[in-house]
Length: 62
Image (cartoon, rainbow, N blue to C red; front, side, top):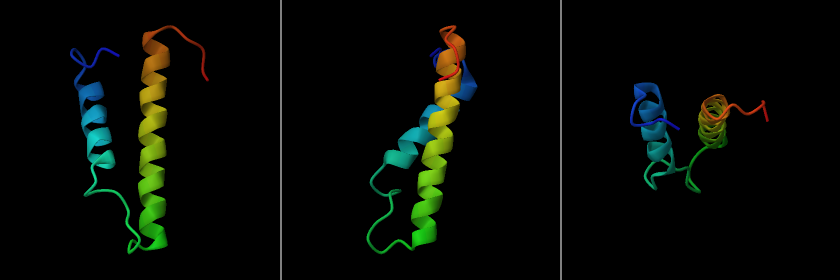
């Protein structure tokens, strides 16, 4: 996706790694709202990375 050349992509990938880190994930003790925020952040990050991928590869919107 051009991560080596694009600082924006590097930042998104770094945030993605932070999200999937075990210490960042919701646990059984996490309030519902905290789990919702985690899922929302994951979805937004995924959407942004997918948009960059489609633009980089000349694909139509999914």
